[in-house]
Length: 558
Image (tube, rainbow, N blue to C red; front, side, top):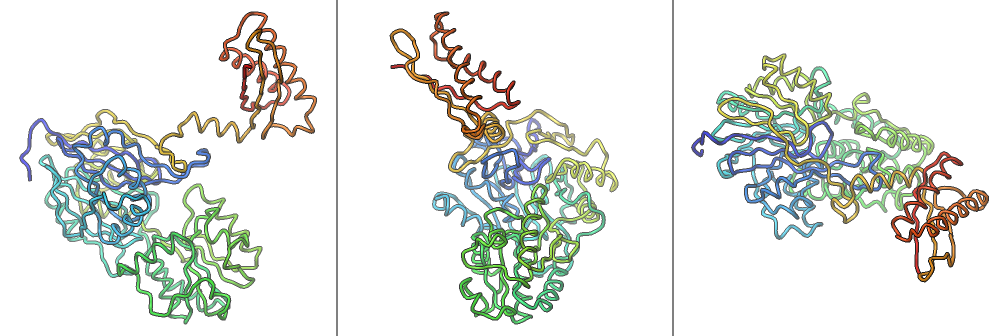
């Protein structure tokens, strides 16, 4: 451990993952050493039209790239690893992860052509890594994906613990128990600050064990008279294993569909995290050749995603598999907030096809959360016994509820910090305070564009989606400024031209009169001409239609 310098301090802040679901990224800095925990993505909200994914703004890290010692990854879910291909293009630092986590990351880096130039370091729950003046160690946790760990960062100022996503599952599917002894040991030595998962802070009691789901799946498989389709998160490897086990117990063959599901099943089975008996897997093309009561289809689409395998089956647009009357469809997941209507639409379409649909998440016994509920969050607080507590992961109301739980177990309210993205907590000489802010926010990914779509572009897209566009094309004479042709008005998404000829003729007249008036006043700058045409036409169209289409004047000179 490096010697303490009285001028140095611990600085903790989030670049993602506070007050929202997804794109987790936390930063711990001591002196000239920066350690990053996770680099996730989140999926766009409804008003982010055309955006594919959202990643954190890492401008603070790129400005201080010489201080960044590496990225520690707690587990292999998208909201913790999905931003890595974008982050590593600007910040080539070592990645530390467990065996399965690195396997999933390597698949992403391969797609992004970054595999050869990215240093990847395998760790396990017993590893110790020196990162400048910060020493990182780890402890085993339970989550809905194997190989998840919490992170312990020892600095000369004190120890910071980051739990990652966790629950306390006393009967885990893979037999990997959370290391309570190690957590208690860390707490006994003294922890200056704890960053702890708040996702289920509103849920009382304990989160049920994943092993409960396996028994319920097997019961459903036994009762199903035809094919069984199970949709779940591809990365929920414990759930996938339980589907495999239930299929074996009921003498059914298994086929896997959906790109991400095939990818994760392949990686997890190659690395030994999934155990699939020889001869168990069949190709999708073989499904229709087998007896209906001998088949299980494992699919993506538990969130009703428009292009997912389950959604395409529900719409009869899947190339290889159709849903037949009497099939049993199990949606083994809870909708992420905002996805409820997509899931509901898929369920409706499945019922129309005559399927028996089991949905509703934990209420049907086919899903349990991977996050600890209130009693487990209290247990973590009591094991780690931090001086300062920073709730992380989740919407603001969840962070607030977690803070109340912290007070219940004896943490002073003034020692609990709820921060926004970019807000920093500084810890020095045993005291903590909210300090300034670092650059932070969302970087929007649209196709191959990273960060080139901002609020103005999104505003234009929203306007286009609501009221459409009018393009006004006019050709002027270079010599005397008279109108040589036009105005020609093209409408897209505003009005149907054949039914609005009178409106567009009047719009044409207004454009012509506006241009003549400006020319008589010797106004010939293009910017002024365009602005005046937009203003006059916009006022007229709003008076007539109460709509505000985007108006795009195109003025040419010949």
